Length: 204
Image (tube, rainbow, N blue to C red):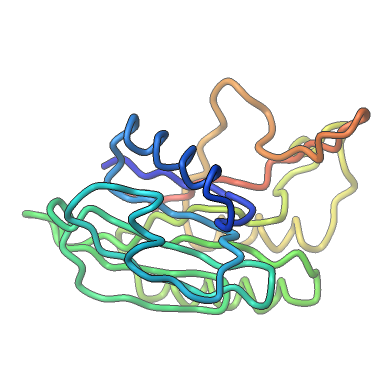
């Protein structure tokens, strides 16, 4: 199964949607998880403007004002949906797997505000309780796990400890990045670079 997760920083631009569409046509994924759509509404036309595969289904989590929003799309010819859970920071979909039960896949867009992160972890722990034994959770967590995941290092924060505890207690695997150390940069002359995006999956 091929899953693509992408923080697009808004789907309002037709040029950006064309770039996404061309990339997905080339990569041929089974599941597409788009974060930060900055859209309060979504229809078939919008979904079709980013992914042209004929047989598709989707779930949408609206943006709050001009921030956030998740669009979760999958190839319905290859994957059969059994259940959907919409959270405040995530979309989780349960898919039937031929011959081996089911798999939950969650797309997340974590809050920037430290005051909301406690709610974020509570939501993910609740989802973890639903998803046993097979779960894959990915997206933009908006927090780093270790000091080495920020260019120049970082002091250990409570958010980092909470993230590390969530991964350990949920018994999720956290694979290293390939060919890169960070997933986000503010693109300044003296850049701030962090690893904010990742995939975690159950050890089954």
